[in-house]
Figure 1 (cartoon, rainbow, N blue to C red):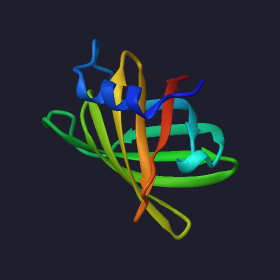
Figure 2: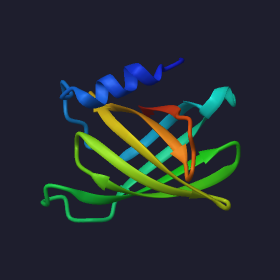
Figure 3: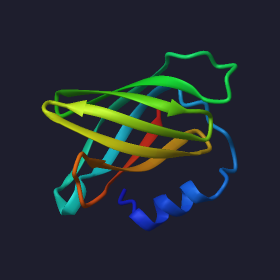
Figure 4: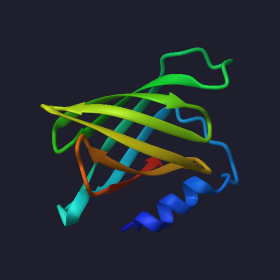
Length: 122
């Protein structure tokens, strides 16, 4: 499934039809920035802060092609803002909820192009 950057940004700007608690396990489908190819893997989201707060923190762990990528997020049932580390690279991603699934865009530190990603709840 190919997700356009415009569609993802439009979904982030609009209020989601259903809130989706991000905690859980997902299959991930993504596209690297600048036409760098598609990828698939898994994502696990764990809450690390208190749920009663308007915003809380989460731990995000991707496994893509056998590589484990770890991130920290701030968000709620509607959005996540994530910083991540992959090897020597750091980056930023933003995701919006769509029913039970999540979609977003990402880039590396000093990046000039966006990748896209969809998380499909398992």
